Length: 119
Image (tube, rainbow, N blue to C red; front, side, top):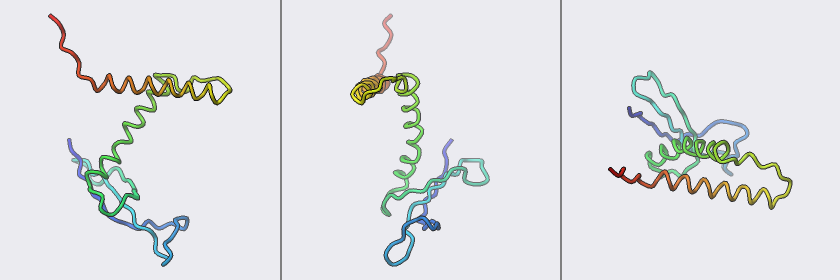
């Protein structure tokens, strides 16, 4: 199953968006995902990446969010990032460092091909 994607340069309207000196709103990318069999796009992203950014890069960066959320959940729940109960910055720093090292090891193990089973 492959979605289709559309990327357009747009100027989002909002009073809170800082304007250029000439008063114009800045351009950004509007990325839309249109899955097969759906009557309309289902997901949208706004991006401030430069004008020359390729569609494949926009899609890759929009979709990488899943990986980031997965890794954070693994850090927090699986490796104990949120278990720190100390009060010192140094203790917290050590805890986060060790948790990050454990995450790096888990990531490397996932990337390493499995050895064939011995018979």
